[in-house]
Image 1: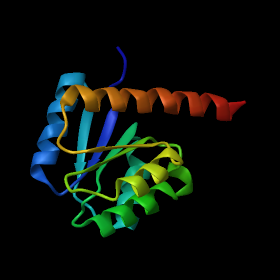
Image 2 (image 1 turned 45 degrees about the vertical axis):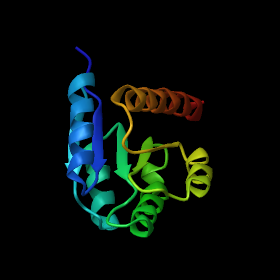
Image 3 (image 1 turned 120 degrees about the vertical axis):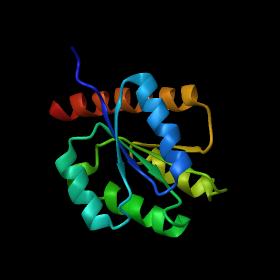
Image 4 (image 1 turned 90 degrees about the vertical axis):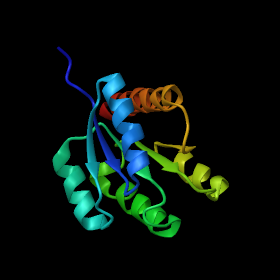
Length: 138
């Protein structure tokens, strides 16, 4: 039997957490929630957790802090190739976010959205990461 994919959910919003817990239950993912907003603690937790993807609410507790947290995770050398997906319940500077996400193996979408759309984006992240991982072995 294949191992469950492990998703780390970084959010302080309960609706956001419930949405992703439901997605995880539907798709057979193991969903671990983290309410850490301290980058150093969170990065250590991620390194020890053997996660397949990080799902981050960009508004933790505000866009500025959420974006800073994202950048610190994404620039940690050991975590650079780990797929990430950013979500926001606020109107965000989408152009800026899209430019960053295109360059860093990260997906982005506004929240709320439908479970199927999110599941599709997560599966695409897993596929992209498998391609990146196999090409970096050569």
